Image (cartoon, rainbow, N blue to C red; front, top):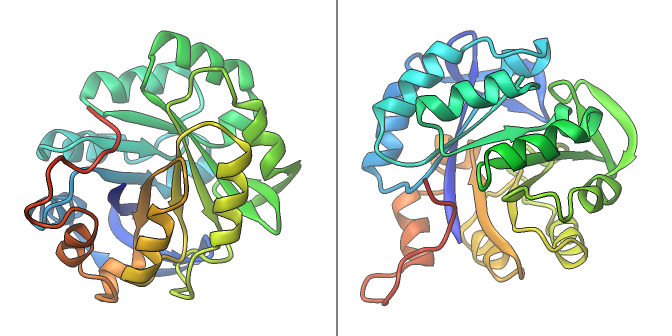
Length: 251
């Protein structure tokens, strides 16, 4: 399983939110590129970048900064936040992004997901953000009438490379992930899954890694507060001397 540090960008800075509340930010760095390089030095094999302002506004806001980050590290980068048409998908991929994450667009425009997956095979991830079993959109501001499982099942057989499943109520709380949600969706949907939200301990990482179909875990606040050491977590999943390499999404 791949461990993926998260960098959320708001106002050009690296921040973490509590339960997706844009008014609850904690700033962890003024230079997101330097943060990306720090995680790379600590051994990260991939990076998760979200344009929070873009997610709320419905179009990329920090695209120039994100392109600089993509090109400023030597690891695969997945990018999300306000990407709702083929133009921005192509721009990020052309700039070197490994994958593009569609969130609101996947709920409102399934045809876009289908066409993007056809034009850019292996490059499209869908983010499903759960709150009380419903899917949140537009930067987690609006709750849809559709359930997580409904949206996940609709994605089957259209070519998305993975689903990022986030429990908003756990995100940024350091209270532990929603293992039950991860297990339920992974069991019912045969698309590779990436867990997100509330991961706080090495034991939880190990527990998630045992869920069939779970290929990655995104970690944010636990890394920034020091609750989890990235080198320790990487060693847990890929200890020295073990043959083979950690599996995950490729460039």
